[in-house]
Image (cartoon, rainbow, N blue to C red; front, top):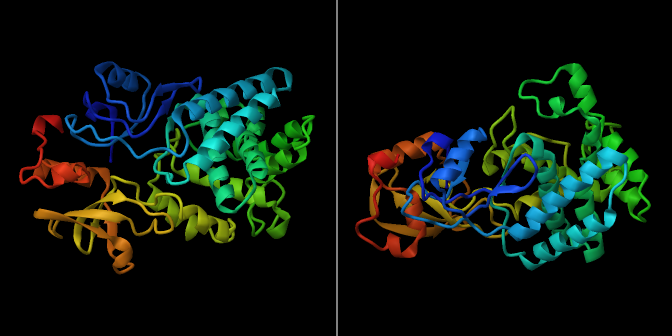
Length: 392
C-alpha cells in the first residue's frame, strides 16, 4: 500500500480508502479502480493524498476487508449528518433512526470479528465530524465487544460514539476547519464541546440519555486528571467513556485534517502507548491495539532479514505480522522471496517502516512494486511484472 498525491495517481489504480464528500456521502468507495474522471475530481476537491493498493495500474489488488459493510458505514454517516442538522435547526432529533443505525453497526462488527482494523477513510472538512463520529462508534463497539459487554451495552456504546461530538454544534465551523494553529480563545471554545454535548443529550427523553451525556462530557478526560472539561480522574471516568476516548484519539490521529497529515498506525501506536502516560486506560488500550493492524497489509518495511511486505496481521500479534521478505538488506531483489511470521523472530526484527518517498525510489530503482509479492501466483514467477518509468 502506498500513499500518493493526486498528480501521481493513474487510471486503474485501486483505492485503499473511501472518501466522503462535504455532505457526508461517499464520493469514492475503497476497492474502486480509479478512472480519469475520479482523478480529475480528486484534484478539484483538493484531496492531499490517497492510499492505493499498488503503484501498478495493471495489478488490481483489493484492500483488506473492513470490519463493517460499506453500505452500513455510508448509511450511518448519512444518519449522523441528518441528526446533527436536526439538532442544529430545532434542538431535537430522531433517536429511533440512530438506534436502528447502532443495531446495524453492532450486527456487522459482531459478524466480522475476524477482520482487523486496517486503514481509515478520508473526509472532506465539512463532513469530518459525521464520518469521525461513525468511525469512533465502530472502534468503540469493537473494543466494547473485546471487553465482553452484552449486545445491549454495545448498542449504548455505539450510540455514545455516534453522538460523542454533538457538542461541536456549538463551535463555529471556521474554528472547526481552521488550517492553522488555534488561538487561545479559539481553543477555549473548542474545549467547551464536551459540556455542550452533555447539555444536548440530557434533554433526550430516551432512558439512556444520562449515560450518553456522560460519554459526551467525559471523552476528553484523562485518567490522571489532565483532561477536560472538568479534570475528572481515575474511577470517576465511566468505562464507556474510557473506551470512547481511545477510539476518538486513534481515529483523529490516523485521519487527514486541514492542519496535519494522517499518521501511520505504527506511529499512532507509539504515540498512544508510550507518549501519553496517564491519559488512557492501559488495559483497554493494549486490548485495542491487539486488534488494530499496527502494520496494515501492504506495509513495506526494512527488517533484520531484509526488505519485506506485510501479507497478514494476526489478532493478538499485531506488532509481529506475517511478511514476505523480497529483498536482502541492501535492497537487492531475492530470487526466491519467502514468508516468515515475525512473531517467531526477535522483538527488534522490524527496523523501520519505509516512508512513501523511499518506497517510490525503491520502485523506480527496481521496477518492481512490492505489492506483487502479496499474490501467491506472481510471487512464484521468475519474471515479476515490472513498472515502466512512465508509470511512476
